[in-house]
Length: 306
Image (cartoon, rainbow, N blue to C red; front, side, top):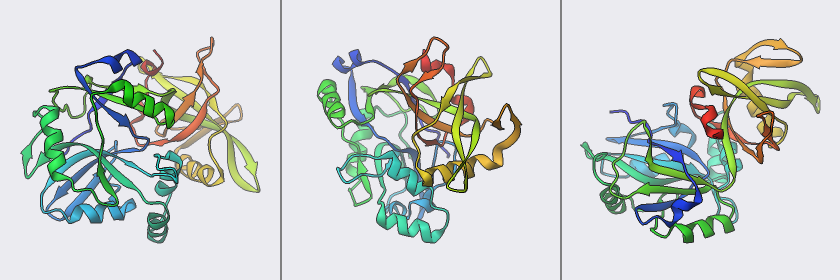
């Protein structure tokens, strides 16, 4: 059975006072549904691609388990301060061949942070309350260098203080006794962000030259509103030379026509953008590129701004 990840609604700080939720740090990584069937391990991203070959150390450690299971978690890379760093993770995801993958696996270790278990030894657990799933997870996962369990607490405000202090992504609030709803976005899970960000579709880019290498100056961004893709501005910062080459390589197969000095793209590539606020013209103010996302483009909707 293939599982789609359960998704969260947006929430606000008032929820941190709730006694009806458990709270987890929102990790700054890539979502992963991990399936272990016999000795075979599959690590599926948001669009169902198996990315286990990019993270061989995680795969090897999970292969050593005797049990079969399906886990939900986040792949992250810790920086020198012990904090999740999306830029390091993007460098891992940029590896193009086995030699690069092996080199970066050693230089930039990745960790699977597990926060849920959906199945154990062919027994479906999605209808079990979250407290029971957490208990099973605690008994199942013995932490190794590249696999660990998420921390969780009933003290939402105390966790938020730590998130703010360490400039982490945010907090997840999950309703006590709630079930796991594969592929659904429900109020049983709420994300409380530390700052503003959205997932946007890259609908085009402006061209440029940098150090005699093909490059781009800005990414043109869009969101879907009632089925129509609407421009919400452009982003001109947030990538280095290596990331620029990687982004351009992802965009090149999607090129369509050029219009008003903008290279238009098929609306398939998704990126995460930090921003300050929305302007009167309904465009992003002070946007900064954060990373590419493995996410269906049609899920990038205007509702993120409402």
